[in-house]
Length: 145
Image (cartoon, rainbow, N blue to C red; front, side, top):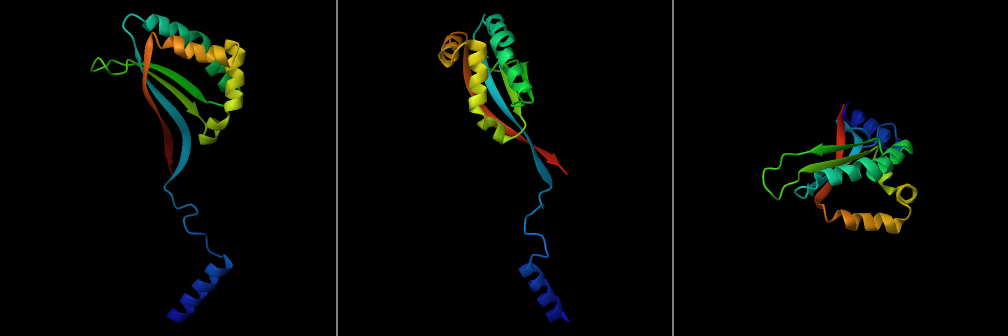
């Protein structure tokens, strides 16, 4: 009898009657992807930086949201523990990793808001006088089944 069960199992595997190994055995599904950036705004420059965030930054984020490139963005103030820690965190949430590849659309939005890619690059340089980007990382939500 065991030989019959083994033979039937073997034939079922050969003919594709069983699900492929690992097809859906994960206890979660992959969710949205969030970029988290840690910013250190220089002393006395928080209002200047938030003014930028409330202007061109917000315009670009809202345009990307409307285009479906991102699903959300947030700005968080942080109480740093040490002088070298971030005092501001920016998050941008994408529906998935594939949305990060929409660079042509993102560039087009930046040009529309700031006039040119050169102006966008210059803005990054100019903001260097009021803040330091300490780092960033991508995190992905795992939705438990």
